[in-house]
Length: 210
Image (cartoon, rainbow, N blue to C red; front, side, top):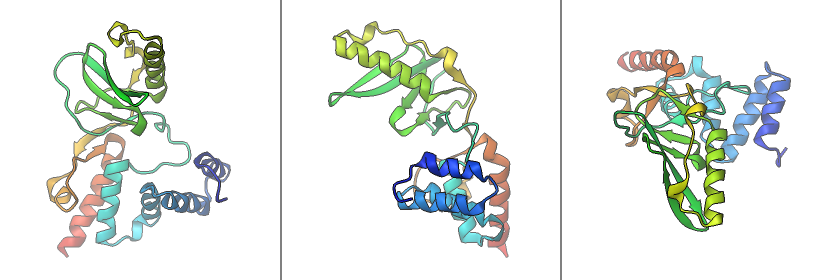
């Protein structure tokens, strides 16, 4: 199994969705890859029995990555928001493209919404719309073709509004009393994780006060 891909691990879980061992094996593989989601999976599996320090670590990882849902997360193909700034008005899409060692910045004439496709991350502070990786890749294909043809990027009109949709997004900042215990960095809690995250945070506060 040393050469297995992530898809193969997820397929194994899909074949036996109630098999906790299959999920654990997947988590161990992620840890071997240096992926912190492996630790998150391990902590989630023991969530009910965690002591206060481990609950705090679970909160941190869940704020950074969202709680892990395997194997068929309905939002797995939606880019995740991770902070940033956007002004009033319609969205302006900003793509950071690297072509032949040169960085190119491509902007759609709307309010700024920065997209870093390599890291599967969208950065903005208005969590209302998402863009799918498929839509981003389609736009990048157009940009690459224009670069290869020697066309000025300013001539490219990016049409993305039809591909924007509600997806994973952070709705609340991590409370100051908890964020202060972590390394610096802005963290948000995904909307769909909010109730679970708050319950764990209250559990951590209660354990610390006793």
